[in-house]
Length: 533
Image (cartoon, rainbow, N blue to C red):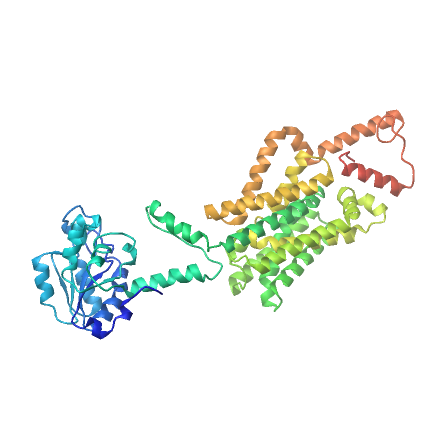
């Protein structure tokens, strides 16, 4: 550091010298005048002890509160008493900071003695940086040390004025330490980092903020924003298939099932991501198998399997603790700790989903709108269901950090439902839901940072707000479309007209020819374009 400090002064420089030390003893006191926090007093000890050990006569001065003239409640008497206790030697208290009485007490000092002047702000000239007042204050000393970092930025008589009369003027050890912290933060910051600038006067902080903003990058916020956009896009894309299949509840269920795997994986000696993903996929396949047995409904199967898995996860985490994200962060989402690994996981999950749905678009299209038609067309519906559950499990696992176990289902469902109210086109639903999910993730993350609310909560609330707006804008028409009734009614009307006209899908339309599978495929493609069943 380029500033000269007390460490640069030797014993020969200080032996028998009167040293005026500007300290910051503006400590908090209670109604009885007792000091409630002596941190600032203790912070000044290293400088005082450094000077006394070198034979200097230490003259301490400080402000205390904001007096308007002499105020007995703001005298430094309690500070002198406390300083004597923590310093381990007597500290003489003066009843003034300038004048003959002060000069006499300074003249009577021995090497290594310490005295404390009265509150310098009892004189209005202090804050005005009056040259005559500064000269009188400096007249009792040979050199000057500024160890009041909290007031060093103010051009007052005891901080700036006296330096014109006392040479050398150096920094104390507290100021040196604070400047070193600031220098390291600006020139060689450890990232991620954030700057917190406090104080009641914003205008005096603008210069500091301007200086700090350039090197400071809020990388954790950047990471969180990217993760939220990827998570929102992933959930928006996947949600289209989930909602059109009438499987909205399974997203809620699988998120809870994955939670059980997250808790069990460390106990089994398995990597958390691998264990939680396998657990979620296993739960999905079990749900599918139970539901297909037709002994109980799909909703009951989801409820039994997933709630049991979630309860197991809670029990394991409560009993054995967690080696991953914090419990509340896993439940409600958090931007803290989103790093490179989490971003790569999200990106990989998104690419996996996009690739899967692109390569197998036709098969997913058929199984989404009519599994029976898909089966007739030679598509292995069970295999496609298993693949969909795999994509869903991986997606839920990847988004848990940002959105949380309890809220991920909403981010899967709401964007798809919103765009369903706006369009019947399957292709438009896919890209619109993906974009809406990404936008909601970005806005939600921005609100999470500024409102200090879990990111999953704000993302879901943004989605819910969009849903309410679209619902009010589209009215009953949008609600019927979202429920799947509009397309069905249109299809039935077209079917009746075709019956009367002797055709198949509308008056005057030619009959569809070909095998039952080909006819069924045409019907599914019509549904995908918004024509209804």
